[in-house]
Length: 451
Figure 1 (cartoon, rainbow, N blue to C red):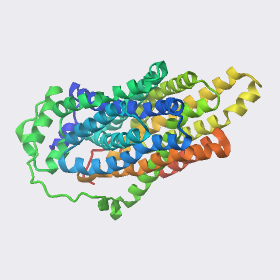
Figure 2 (figure 1 turned 120 degrees about the horizontal axis):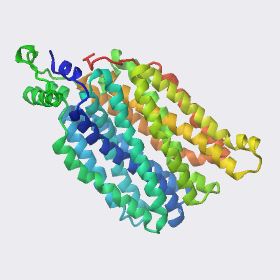
Figure 3 (figure 1 turned 180 degrees about the vertical axis):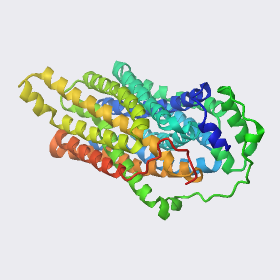
């Protein structure tokens, strides 16, 4: 019985829970940092009198760093290990976020946000790869969606900080960024308490460490594997790891479908969520009211993840992802047409208009974050161990190109036709992602084989 098979037969144990929690806290801190910038943009638009062009740069510069970090982080994780890269990236972006609180002007803040993005971009695909490689195959998708659900926790924390702390004083945004230094401390916990991927250790010929990790997880389930049931160790063979491998004939179709899905989802999600508090404020809401709106719609993310976590093991990754992306498109269109719908229901009623718009935003939030969970579940499964983190990182990096471009395009699209045109475009992007996702392979319940 191979070590991978021994891991796959285990129930979900306390040791799995510690791995999920340790990685998930880092994930939540990532989300809090990304989410905070949307509230800080709204505050700085007033305090520093920033133009829409300057706000676009502030919203997108982090994603430039994330594109670089995702591609390099994946390569490093396949060379030096998932745990080391995870801890290093937490340290980098935690320190840079803390320093951002001391920014004396836009240029300094932009430079630090770029560094923050490098750390964030490298961390996310590495964390999902590490968790997926330990999760038993029958519940792997559910566990990865549970990891992704920490994003909603972090974004909710950002919404609470944005609602209660940012408007409290002129220095509120600085205190908000200062909280972002927490990941630097968490990096120490990650470095010494999370295990290294067994599959990575085997690929590098470090069989004693791999065996110790498997025994640790077996012990947490009260299982002891007799020596005569353990597979003989085979010498590790050097594996080719590089972006060119993603475009070999056997992976080309998957890579194209995955990259298109990541690109379209990033464009729609970050275009909508990064700018939303500012757009609502510019359309007549008070700053506090726009933060309240965002806080409520963020709550809808949690049930979205919960439903996706169930469906990825019932319907499969591909069907769940496509369904939730279609639901996201419907939510975006509903948000675009909410004023007309509210006007038909109760002409001239501001409260009805607010309620209808918020309901549409909650639909968008529910389906969009459920789609993210399914996307992170399928991404690490489509490549073998030697290139799993590289493939995940490359797809993430390509998606970040859309994430950096979307905040720049939002003011332009908003100027052409306001929120209706803007969210129709996002609806189209979600539809493109849904179509592309149908070309992805389905590995529900299967072992992470070296395909």
